[in-house]
Length: 431
Ligand SMILES: *[C@@H]1O[C@H](CO)[C@@H](O)[C@H](O)[C@H]1NC(C)=O
Ligand SMILES: *[C@@H]1O[C@H](CO)[C@@H](O)[C@H](O)[C@H]1NC(C)=O
Ligand SMILES: *[C@@H]1O[C@H](CO)[C@@H](O)[C@H](O)[C@H]1NC(C)=O
Image (cartoon, rainbow, N blue to C red; front, side, top):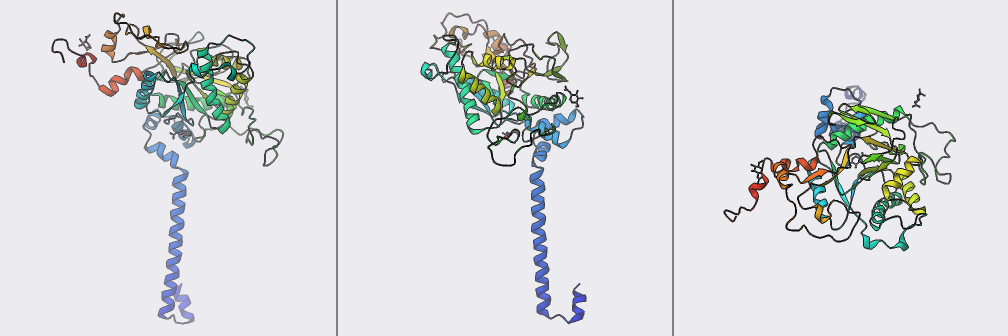
């Protein structure tokens, strides 16, 4: 090119130099442009790349040899992240239950969850003047009112801030140590399930909602019959939260209504031989339309669900919190789904280690407790010494199916094959 130009008039040293300078400028611009493109591409695929290189469970997901789109892989990776694909994981804990706080910390530590304490509402905070009306006066215990209020405080925050879905747990929740890969599997099948039932977004009355725009909100007037967006994996909202109000991961009972609107899928981490309404599950899990749950051990809630429950309780607080959910599901006013066997359950203390005597197995009755008497039955310590665990799942969670309950394996994970009684006081040596 410079020869062509040069044929017109011999270039002086200066003009060659200035041309060279302008080439250099073009090169520089190109370089900056390339760097920007690279940054853009990297940012665009950041999630996929972290999924590939850092999340340990992704490897496992690939081992099963099932081909999956990058979009699906990203969604599953997010659903198995430290907040299980939700905005946050909250657990509701009473001030005095340091023991539950510690159990939470230990389980989260070894299974890679990120959980946040949300203060319970203590009995002394309950004054009838601040409680909603009820058509069934004197039915609820103070403990039940406090429990409802703690959950309502979270719903209220969600509604005020229009938060993305959160997972809410009771402080005595427990789960399998492999909860993250388990939830990746739930995610893969939950989206398939939503597709199979031709799910559409739930009514969303919030200001400016993209799914159901408020007539007074800014922006284009929505068409009267908008075609629903296709259901697909979405790493930014892996649980497609516009499609449900409540998603239970830890119910202890569930009503049979809608039990056949379901998807059964293989999950090698479910112990064999569980029962689903008379059908034997062979290392399988079920995702279903909820019939109405009992126990708020662990449930995810969207802002539409939070608004519905907050409103229902504000109008008529006639039920404890879980039955409020149950009855609003039974009446089909709450769009709710659940997983069976549940991914989470409640723990309680091993019997005969002195904890029943303190009333440590339940909080609902409230009040101060007496300490274990010195002559209490102590035969449970034999099991505790053998296993390094003082925790078992609550008997009424009969559908629980853990391969490795995180609390049961905490000792082995943290202290290896240490034996509890080796660090007991030895009466022979006095040490
Ligand atoms: C987990 O994934 C969800 C959904 O993409 C996201 O909102 C949340 O922030 C992620 N959690 C963490 C700890 O990155
Ligand atoms: C979902 O839609 C498809 C296509 O319109 C239809 O064939 C199928 O029966 C629907 N499924 C349900 C559960 O409604
Ligand atoms: C505790 O368990 C260990 C290993 O199972 C056993 O050797 C030991 O005798 C047990 N100690 C007591 C006091 O039961």
